[in-house]
Image (cartoon, rainbow, N blue to C red; front, side, top):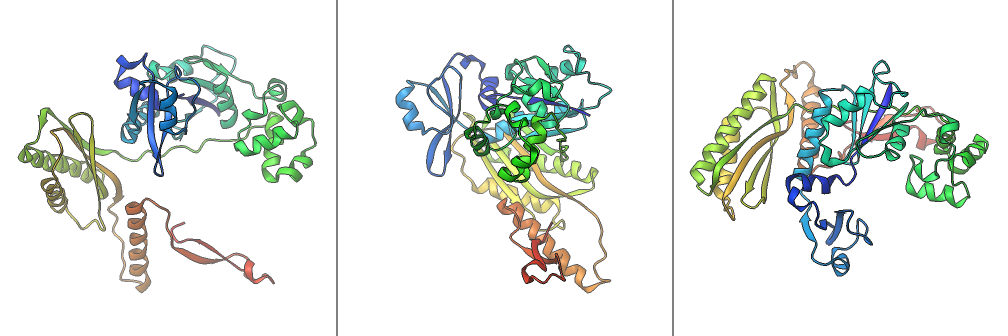
Length: 393
């Protein structure tokens, strides 16, 4: 299987211009917070002399009267999700790397590396709006396809037969390793693939460990990297857009109830129950108010969820009229019956797993609970006999 890599340069800027095309010639900054500091997340190419991560206050000294947007993660996620879903209609095997790029598994029967006008490229590029200026590369492996995409022109396919002769002049900075490691390699005078491949494999292993072996294989035209196919969750969401913005709470409460009933109908069809629900209200001017509700057990029915959401809306005072309401089921589980009374420990284990899952969903962090497993139980070194692993792994 060959791999195609689709790079979406300046995705957040292109997403903003997609909904505001009249600003295409303006100098645009997208700002966000890192800790308590407001920094530049992305910017248009017509702004020079600054870089991502720069303090916004310092940038504003250099750039006069730019258009500044606060980063809208929900909007970017929605736009990116639509792109991925359009590709999933065409291909079964897709891996996503944030907003940076999309890897697509191409069966060998469909992809010819010698055909620069292949129909596979037209399929991919047609599914992505032209405004994103996507770069597309096709090669034998995941990492080699990424390098190929970097070297391609926007809106066109570039193919690369990944072998030692074709890649020998490539810069060390194209290696699929960390930036720190690239600098170390470059500091040793190894500024292209040919110089690295001229060394014996053992020297790279001595200097860089296991990753050194990977580097030596890669610069010699061996790319065995494969994509990890994305698993798309079922989408259970409904939304209502009012004919005109409203601050009538009776209308809002009726809309919330209707949307939640529609979502529960979708859940029942899929034999699932909700674990986390998002209530999203879009206010006049594009401002969003989002409330997350986490459920402990599937015993709660739709009437319970309706009462909670209606109470939340009724007790919240919106700063302006509401244009749109969306109910989104973020986490679901299947309604599978489990016999817990036969063995006494099953009920405790099930309760603990549910508690850990709820903790992870509520705080969006990895589980802090570990268990002890045998590693080398008969080792003479006590520290090697057992290891700690996450309870839910």
